Image (cartoon, rainbow, N blue to C red):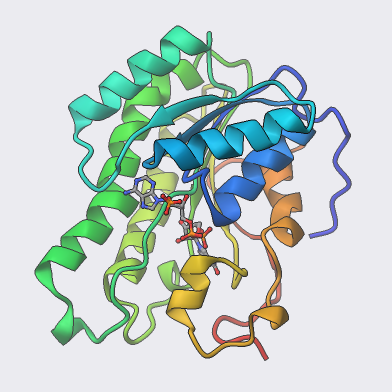
Length: 253
Ligand code: NDP
């Protein structure tokens, strides 16, 4: 995507990023801070969260708030508690990037194990939904809120062996579409980003033999993350946007 964001695109915006400790989420947090945002970082590992927060602060940006939540076990009540904690830290949320996700097992449907299936659905769908529900009132306090989910090409077109992950991303697309319709008349837009094959630990575990040098890095795909989070996408809602338009799904060639 060719997008030239204003340097101060996210000035005075307060943004929460899930899965902010690694890969695309970490890069998005750093990028949003660079464009003026105040951040709330959410992750399951307190130490990694504080390392990312310090990294951002050392570059001269405000110290992000850190909130610990293990989405693999999070209930609706846990997500409510997180929202209450966030409310004590910030007056509103102008954006939420739902980025945290897990891959599960890349095996045929007949071999999907119950516990792994449930874990993928819990992290990618259930906890993501409970957190969304809990954070909605903070998002609706913004004059221009942006709620972004993370999808995948296998969340639009099923592919053999992508099992629980693919199904969870179809659910993510559905969740986005329902919410986008429900909040059409409010100052809240709801969209999905499909990062496309990107050089992270999740990608390496999905395609262990792939030459990672042929993949875009998280930094390369940030323009669409900025565009959807900033006011240039105001009133765009219900969309599923590719961070790498035209890229064919599958192994990098
Ligand atoms: P990574 O595995 O590099 O990072 C995933 C992030 O999610 C990490 O911060 C991780 O935390 C966090 N996370 C995992 N489990 C939990 C949990 N139980 N509770 C809280 N946080 C958790 O993945 P990517 O950066 O590659 O992926 C980011 C998103 O992009 C995902 O939704 C993925 O499905 C999607 N995506 C990625 C593609 C790619 O090619 N990379 C392609 C298409 C979609 P921790 O640091 O503790 O492990």
